[in-house]
Image (cartoon, rainbow, N blue to C red; front, side):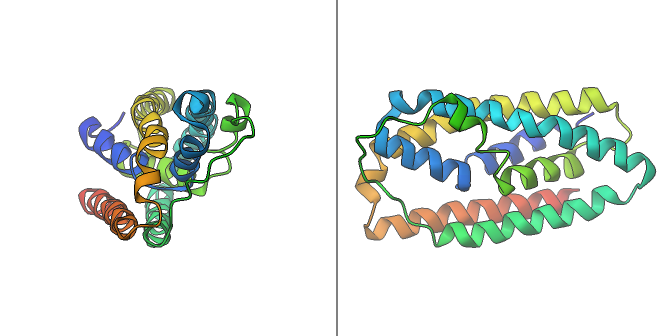
Length: 198
């Protein structure tokens, strides 16, 4: 079972709502193709995360039964990677160039999270910090999957809409740097809180 559902949802929101490879892709997709045209791609991205949640959940939970320190090892490895990503995010810049090509579709979105190391690290951190290692595997994995799905349904379309409406205004301006530093800072704060509370 998830040890603290509220804290896990807070962590999930902090990671899914902050910049990373997937959100930067959705932001630029919204900027290039518009919100409505990008929606099939966005839903593909949401479903794509489910493709990796289940194998990671079952794998970690079953592996932990024979090797009880595996959660601790992966907790620090995945948190370290997310902190490194936060540093990279602070130096990212928004691209808001328009395109006449058709918007990527649902199938293109499906592969985003399986190829996104931040997604793997987020899921691993979620399991190693917020799931009781002795809880039933199916229940714990289903809870994590459902929570992440719900947070994605809220946050991913917002990033796409942000790309359409706001990215053009900030792209190339002095505010762009502060915006990226703010998001990187949020990432560092919430990862640090997750480690400290576990």
